[in-house]
Length: 329
Image (cartoon, rainbow, N blue to C red; front, side, top):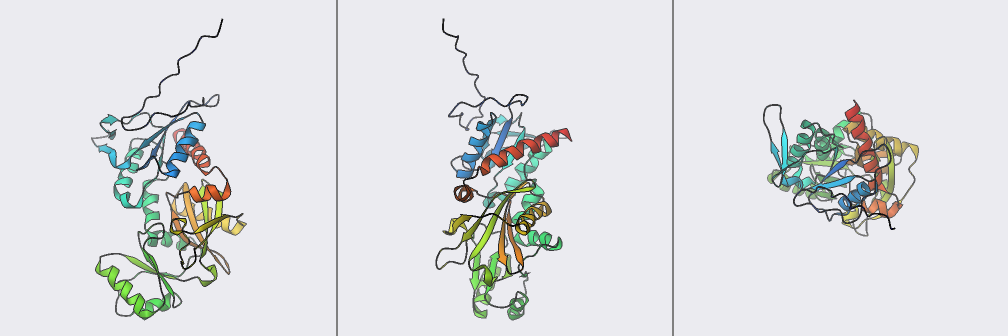
């Protein structure tokens, strides 16, 4: 007689989300199945797909919620949330992937999950801190980490002095809230600097001037920090004719083993800003790492391909441990 077939248990799925497209593995013995929410505008994004796969591979339940479809409900001592009309309950941990274009509403959603008592990997205050380039650099500088000389001002009367403060031409000009290399320019003459500053100021944009670190030669280092360790790193090199090394701008990534000063600087930067998961960008200066930027929702497609490492798995493993520690505390 053949063994009796057991019908698999159905996994509840919110309207608008997709049911698992392959069987979930059972959680390890002693570990109950968890529901892990990924806040993301698009399920098809590489990082979102990889995180979903990592959750399933560990026998847990992934749930992708479009941040802008989350409805926040407030009443005295009873914050609630609905998604497409269905109440959101039973969430064990949230991994936010908040795009720069929806930062304000995204932070409200992340904060609401915290108010509901759900652990969130990267708190809203830290995400906000990282999104403001100047504010993040203020924290890094105050902690003693080396950063390129940076100045923010609204004084149009003496641009020459501003340029001198960042060690002269050429100078890097950045939008405070740019991302993926968008809003980052290089100016080689004072008239160029004046024109760019006047244009952005007239548009109501906040900008910073930053020292051009010549020895970096169009390269930087991206380290991905999870918890208290670097789980992968690569050196990014700008394509020909481009000074920005971002992968989204055509830069190439090569896996590297970080030396202790770079590892320590990356982890310390994440701690200073208050991020559990962070992409830390550093320039290779003559005297060692120079912290350039920190990202609270780092893409990791280029890093996984360059290193062959399971970055998504490391993030999910840490999210589950982080949630357990939060609930135990």
